[in-house]
Amino acid sequence: GINGNLEVNSGCTLDLQTNLLTGPGSTNSFTISSNGWLRLSGSNNFPSGIETISLSNLSTVDYFADLNQTVFSVPSPGYGSLFLRRVSAGNWVKTAAGELIIQGSLTINDFFTSVDCNTISANITLTGNL
Image: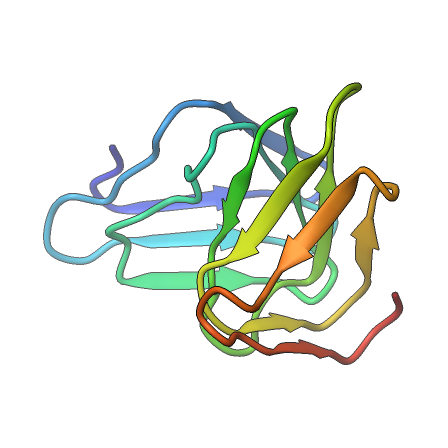
């Protein structure tokens, strides 16, 4: 876990694979700067227990796995760009855990990857490109 602040700088990628990143402690933050990437390959492993989450409108979060994944509801202003992808095989569902706000682009890999917003009646607000 982190106890303090963690920033993914411009041009860097934090690949959590299937690992969990938690924020135990009093005050901590997770930031992705412009042109920073976060790749998630677990079923539900967006960083959790963190008081402040700040994603640049030019950052990217990539849900990249051959399994069903929960897409975290990032507080406003939301995601920069959001990628929902599979690695190679199968039909996989990426389920919104709440409202999804996307400032940049939303990329859904192919027709084998679907997005479920109905489970909790979530909305997607997209101010960029689909």
